[in-house]
Image 1: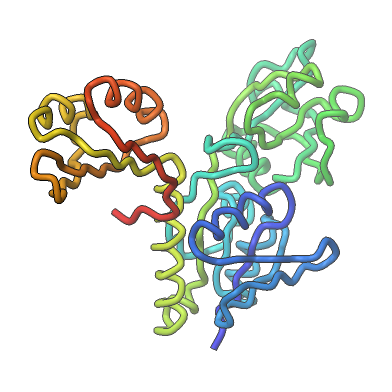
Image 2: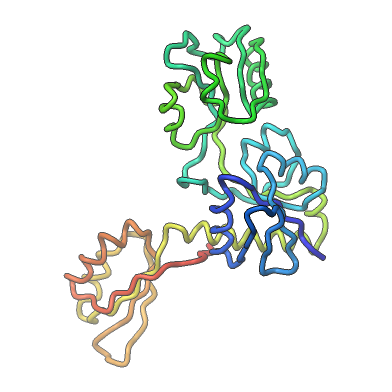
Length: 289
């Protein structure tokens, strides 16, 4: 038996492969192929546009996949959500689906869109948003490059943005935020009813979540003089419980702790000055809570 797994093709592809690498899976794909190869014979991966993944999962064409909350909302597909995976092509911040117009536009709220034309890939989401606000406007499907269409072709666009830099570069401003979105690991209702597939999917969830937890954490090892134990350990952030081991030298102990990268960069010099030696910082692949 195999698990049919949909992976997002495009801007999220490399970040997704990197996440799976930390989870223990190696994906490889040629530049012209939509069929990656993975070092797990029980997984059948396929690269798809993230917009399509919720629909194919609802239809049972694929069993599970990674896609954005925005595309789940736009499609209206019914899927089983396993977990949130906060990664994207540039940062770990959520993306926003926004209504944007030219800086010189007289549009300042959704109500000002009455009778106007909007270009977007999020057609259903935009139509629902307009209906909820009692606004009649024309919504045109766009294949992309929406920023260049305002204001010569359309009065407004609905697009996703991670940093807002592309909008600013095209002299556009955000009017309203329709949705905040992150990547989600989702599965079909039917796959979750199958014992083998559910077990495989839940195992992937544990490993992917563990890989996400480890992204900003590192391990830190050090040796301490026993007589300075309390003084040196007091430098560690509160709520951190280090593992303490004895050494062959009774006057020394070994300490190991998991910390954020930002904490360690300030701690190492302080720990060294306080008397810690043999400090070793090492990366983590997975942290399971």
